[in-house]
Length: 534
Image (cartoon, rainbow, N blue to C red):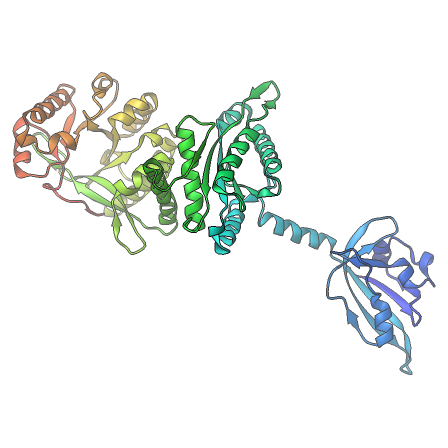
């Protein structure tokens, strides 16, 4: 059997042991036979290390079965310690006289270690040994619930140029840097607070007893602690710096997620203002309030993905003079809030772009639109928007090609809209993206053409099929001669380069008439049709 079994006589002297018990005690039965068990079997409390009363002696005295309620440490003669659970039962002869007892010992050392490991990693980051984000949130919640008005501060640190270390030296170097930074922060904070790893290269420090002034001072000390030594990796040497945000806790601090978001927003402001500095969150700071609002959207975007609350609409693009696509529309994303109301993209797309979530959104739009197009099975042509960040994502093109192949949709039914600013900013990647997909049969729209006033020089290098004239030029075109001239010029450029022209933002019949008269090929806007669910 897997348990250690020791048989003793009525005086508690060892009579026999099984092999498991011999291994647990580190003694052979021949060595201890006739010796009182208490002399060779020493146990102490696992927590206090105080000697425990003999379970066998208790069993013999009370003539009944007894069992330890807690785990205890078995101290072997060679100094090794084992965590054990035990029970003892009396043995009676045929006449009912007490003949001895049997001690059963179970070694739970490995199980205890596993439980401790699970418990540790439930609250700690395995790489750095610091608390992880959820545990810091729990401790922050307890602090605020116990009376946040008593003060405290939360500091958020983000390493500057961490990606350079990873890209140049590999992830092993990046992991070593994170461990070094964690050690520096842990030493700098001491018993004044707790340190957590909040994300890839982000750290949080909760200072529950700090005043506002002390919180600012501590934040500066932590910044200096991170940048106090150079990071060396083989032949490379790096200056380590951190951008730091700090928020003072108080009665009006809000819920833990709001406090953490405020600290992250302050850290982002420090990064945007030059890095390697401390920025304090102030509720009436307009710039920070904007960042704070955007960061709140990040959590809402993640939840919308988790709860499948994104949906697609499409807005028709009507052919005018020379337009040949009859069933043409632009795909637009919407989000449903918790109450089921539609949220326009202008509310969440800026935050998604700033915090690099837009490629994830673009991928979802491509997959979902293609699935819808395949299900409809008609000859509709869809225009899908692609952001500049998606263009710079090396895997996005492969994902689009895979989605087209999986859907079985004819690529000739797809247009991809890229803004002129995104195309110019990512010219090489945009050109490759367009060239590969055009070879498949897809077409391209250069969106918001003319708004950046830089695309004329680059237009000849981009394989574009349509120019979309920015709505800022189209709205009010019938009343403004300058706008009329601009729209006419863009249309003429498109015709010279054998590109179709699409005017967006058409909101009146007179604007539509003016566009038709000058020969614009397509029109889009509320006068043509409002977005409808796909």
